[in-house]
Image (cartoon, rainbow over all chains, first blue to last red):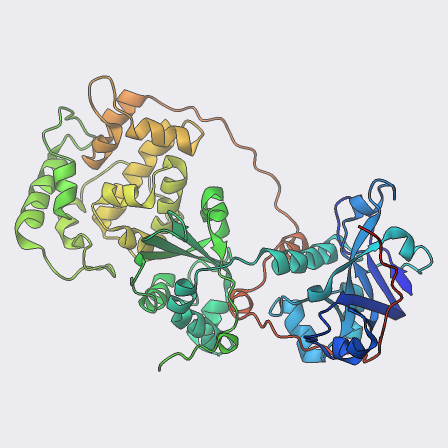
Length: 279
Length: 224
């Protein structure tokens, strides 16, 4: 096993361990095996399966790794798995939160399987060779972003995800097109949504923040408010969502309070939710 | 202009002096009562049918406010600055203009204002800049608090009595905020979130290629 050390930096995640003989262990119920690995060993009277993987990536922050093994004996690791080239691209863009791109292994199409994290004692890694996985502050941040995304996705209420589906479909449908709206969508940095007083309230005021890139003040001669009007038409006030508003603005125009009190519009793809948008 | 607005901010306030000597204000308020109480004029420049008819304010457009309005100060930016500095909510700011909140959101997104609204916007911004205490919360508290003579500065702003507001509250002398140097392009990019279309189209399925070798691990069970 080769262990990849990170660029040492207080607080940086991404110590990467990689090698040719890694394994990932998980527990299962022998009466209901859910994976090929558990099905393969269920007859042997065990409830643990050990699957070969391409390596392990350490998710524990560097500042915790360097503490003494007596104080902090454990490391959190995730298996490194291989994916197809187009999948690696999707992971890099953040479209597949199950996985995290490992910058140093990007060209080998090897990524972290964040669904199968496990705990090991530090001593297990003592004999492994260490290789840097994140080679710069920027790479460490992108890797950390993937970990945060996996753990911090907002659980929007079901009625919200159903209600917002038409807007979501518009975003996905128009984004790649060479249309004015497609180009405008590509000039958006982020979409955030604020629910007041709270998501679970009987009636909710919903405000969408369409955060554009700083330099995109007017979009190719088109005014943002025209596009905004089209987007808001897709989400008319209905049900609990009785007040709906939205603004296109730059990040510096959003107050810190509004940023903190809103959530990124992070939703599973419509196709995975079985949602069909009427034409 | 909606009726609740007129009802909430009656015209008979004791404060009378404005930078326009009240002439413009009186005319606007007479018009507001007539529009809100009788006509309910349809067709506005905003996307919301409940918005104030912009032409109701056209009489204001040609006054000389005396407020400096540089070309670079777009109304969109002015609205957002007004909001940041004043600490007022979108709803409260909309009431300052007698429009709906949605109309204000559209203005902030770049929808053009009538000259009258634009003039009013810059007057408000100039006033709020002068009374700025350096904290949005402090400014909001100041604007919404009841003054010793019974006036609420917010109501005076609605009535366009900007000089009266400044006389009541005085200049703010906000401390200068630090202006840190801009981040490098790469550093900014490293802090960027995933793109909206990727965030709104997450694929949760597992699609990697398994190595395919499975074995039973060596296990030593510990006693509880």
